[in-house]
Image (cartoon, rainbow, N blue to C red; front, side, top):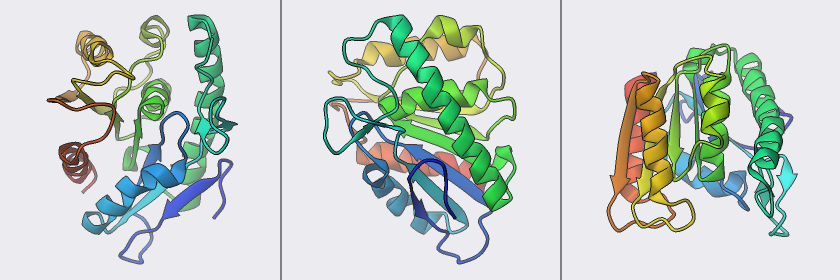
Length: 217
C-alpha cells in the first residue's frame, strides 16, 4: 500500500487484516522512522493493529535530513496557524487513505504524536467530521486555542503527557491544553512526569499502550 505521505508501516503481527490503526506523528526535525520505535514496542501487545508513521510533508528548515509539519522559525502566530492548516489538510488526507485502504471506520483509528506531531494531531483530530477513536499527545500544545475553540467538530478521547522539566515545549502549554479540554467537556486523561525533559519516558510509553488497549481492544 502507498500513501500520500511517505510512511513507515508496521503491519499487525497477527498477519491478519488490521482491526484498527494507530497513526503516529513525529516531532519537528524528525521522521516517521524515529517515532516508529514507539510503534515497534507497542506492536507486541496489539497484535491486530496496523501502525503508520508518516514523514511530515515539508523538509525541516533547520535540519538537512528531518521533516516538519509546519515552519516554526521566525514565524508570527498567524503564520504558524496558516501553515498548520496546510499540514492538517495533508494529515486528514492520510487518515482518509488509511480508512479506505484498510477498510476501517474512523472510530477504529487513534491519532498520536510527539511535540509538533502532538500539536498537529490535536488540531486535526478535533476538527474532523468523522470522530476518530482518540488522540495520544506527548510533549505538545494546542497550536492556537482561539482557532480550535471556534472549530470543535468532534470529541474523541484524549490523553496528554508532558515532562515537568521540558524546556522545548514548557509545561505551561500542557496546563493550557488541560484547561481547554476541561472547559470544553472533553473526556481527557492527563499525566505530567517528574524531572522529565522533552522526551517520552518509559512510563509514557506504557501509559500510551494501556490507553490504546483500553480504547481499541
